[in-house]
Length: 211
Ligand code: ATP
Ligand code: MG
View 1 (cartoon, rainbow, N blue to C red):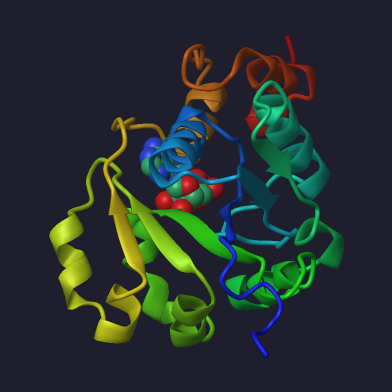
View 2: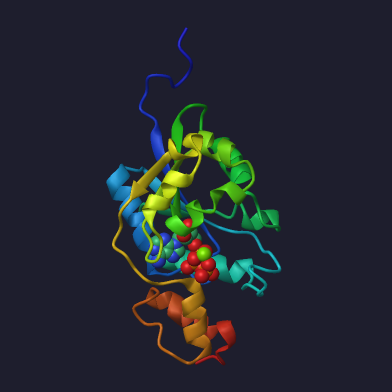
């Protein structure tokens, strides 16, 4: 007898993971392009859990990052937001999150499209169980200024076979640059959605002293 769900078209679920400190238009354009180009049913944004250090700096609390991600995604009907990593309290490994998310859906009913920038994909061999990640989902490698997609050729065959390179409108925006601009009193208008900009000022994030 055929397995349940076999032969049916699987729903394609996009997953957009990130620290989102803060979320910016580079993240949003990546998710939107993946949604349309790959015919996804939805994209679930997954902010990372609290860690004391990311590259040696303190990151904003997970609640701040979660709220900014909600403000940035709420006007898009096919974007969703998950607390799965945040509620674990500690940083999660991608493979563990993917395994947990699979349990949210009936067996064999969905396929996952994990959306990452080229910079992140090129780092994948340093993640926990990269070969298992490649088996568990399709990895969508979106273009990002400063990173060359020809470098993907250097990854092992088993990883490459699950990578879908995707050209998106290039936005030279990073959260690091936005934090720096805020701390220097420079404008971040048109780099982040305006509710995120207001949230940053209202909560004095990134060493800016409020409004
Ligand atoms: P930081 O500077 O703090 O590392 P970031 O801008 O890289 O922040 P992350 O939260 O680290 O943002 O990134 C989440 C995901 O979004 C990663 O896969 C990253 O490669 C991708 N990404 C971030 N910015 C862009 C961008 N401008 N274009 C394409 N992909 C991006
Ligand atoms: Mg980054």
